[in-house]
Image 1 (cartoon, rainbow, N blue to C red):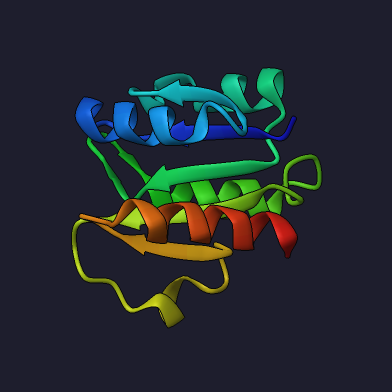
Image 2: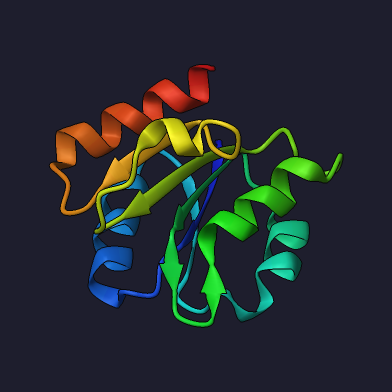
Length: 117
């Protein structure tokens, strides 16, 4: 079973994403990005869903670090945000972008597409 790490500080959104994915994926939901490096190292996800705005942590910086590290560069990254962001700006750091709020069908489609890349 593929592993999905979700880093999202909005507990409601985190719970929705986890519920949607838990039957098809092994999911590790994280509401605080404080120890994300340890979580990634221990869990070794295939896909990471990362919110852009995480309080003290910047989701884009997390993506940059993951893509620049040879041990984690293989992880497929999906960036989420409630703010409108130009997807072209994120191509270097992520494999897909999901604007919040999102439709469940759109969310699952993006996750399925990303795992096939």
